[in-house]
Length: 481
Image (cartoon, rainbow, N blue to C red; front, side):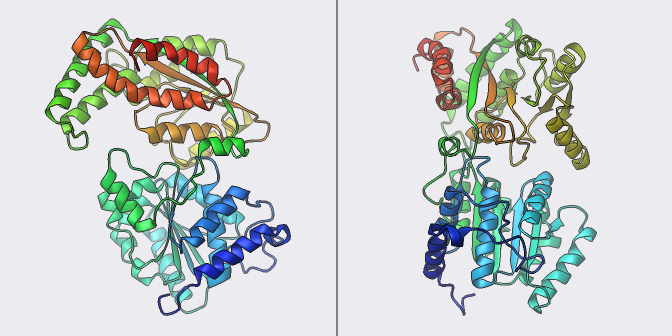
């Protein structure tokens, strides 16, 4: 590619002209002119204006860049549109997509099929993909095959079996990092191929939590965040996501939980005083995780959930986010307790959707959920990134971390449009901090300030923003925040 440099200015200008002309921007009849397996925008999926703008910004940035777009706003479509443009303009030969989870590989495969692509999936046994990859790379180099689409997971990407193939990828290869914040870890970033010049990162939250160095490494490789960012407010305003109602539900700790909470908060204060660097302070990190699990699995959340759902037994398409902790006494995980409460006690038709659920079973549950045969899905974390179940209309958050990535991903997941879905409803359980001594109260005030950021961001964009923020105001006033 260096011997025949790409005229990015011309490509970007031509793309801008095409998008300004409705006739030129219309996708052609599906696959009439493109060979099988080569990218083409389907007639059934024309791009929105903001997606055209994202494609243009990447082209203007000379084939590098990070797209920070709200969850559910169609980053995959933008990526495949970029792929199509590169094929038309420079005869791109290989599309390599790297994503964190197996279910995202199959999800990407479904989207690729719409774009006339027949991807090779590299995420299970090496025997199932390695020989096919070697053969197809040879066919690309010898001009026997026009295009190769390869989708893999982060874990497979790290293996020697995969890394050994990277040297055979042609210069005209585009690498796409999906949920790219994961690729900023030292182990993964070190393995990203420097010989591939065309690079695109996708994430609603590319900044790595408490890891500025990892964020810098990620952006140095893929390219800076392209402006303007496409926010959740933009997505709702332009109809890419549905509006929502937000209801905070306040929960008090039990006496035993209050004692444990006070001790942990005091120890957190000591750890913060000893070392203010939260990134390297392993003691502080461990204490914050213990406290987060305690809050996430507070026993009174079950009573709150019972009261809420006893009035909503007629509803369907509800997602329940649990924590990975144990409820008071340590005998039962919150996931199991919630499943028993909803299913056995209330008769609400639910099933658990976790990382241990086989892919075929997940797909079967997704279909049952969409049809309403299953009224609800109970999840821990595996629905936080990338999974696409647009039929979700209601969500109950029983546990959350303070990592802003998690709630940004979750909110976008709930707001994806779906036929007949005009608005989503979100219930968020919020633990009210117990009364503490003055010294511990100051520590709690600083910690709570970060927690309130999530609640207020949720409330700010809701259709019932005034009502939701009024409920939170009392908490703000009590802690002088």
